[in-house]
Length: 221
Image 1 (cartoon, rainbow, N blue to C red):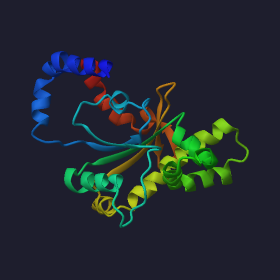
Image 2: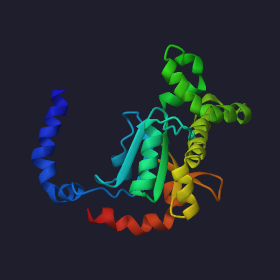
Image 3: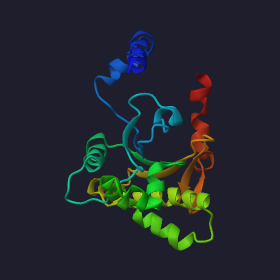
Image 4: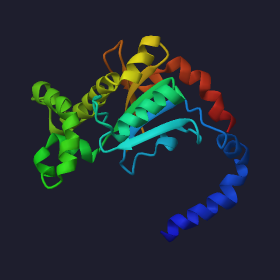
């Protein structure tokens, strides 16, 4: 904890003064551009990956970047999605998986989490993705099967997200976009699902013109 406490002191004495205007503005309210659903894995740093400032992302994290299908049962993910859609009215949702994901390794082999009953039940929300890998990935090696599972899980959670009533309303209104990403921890690469191509492609390809239009933001810094 002393390491983290020292970080807090550094933030208060050096980082906050440089961004005082930003934090004073954020104290009045938030208007995030996206709901970002990611894995809880400590190696996935959402702000670093997206180069975003406080206030730009409304973040939900859990084991396996999972979105349970909507039911009458209240849960943290369901409540957060409802708030993001109906109150914050974010225009984008990103579901981001990542390589070397322990949750997906568990989903691939549920016997490995038998001693963790809550984890095993939670990973049941990824079962359909595992079933797809079992049906279509018989000729693949283990690394290829895991890569396929990461992508299929993101696509499955995107389907689950659409079952939430507030999401369905926003999609019907035409003012919400859902994105599926996979982040490679080792290389820093991020791929995004391209519905037209029916596959994951580099973000620079998926959002080519939009990326180019925002490039100046980082060149200036």
